[in-house]
Length: 66
Image (cartoon, rainbow, N blue to C red):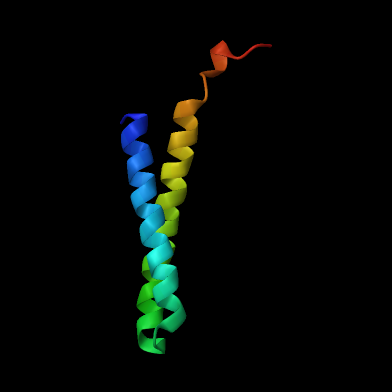
């Protein structure tokens, strides 16, 4: 997967996380449980994408100066 696609996906997930956080502030207790679960999953996905993107930008270990 190219860096551009990772960055685009990361941006979309980040926007979705922000939207769910705003919804969570005004949610009823019944909705809150479902929103928290979705938010937890999206945060995990965001973190995975962020780590993948950071890994793409680092040069391989054999190219690091000693």
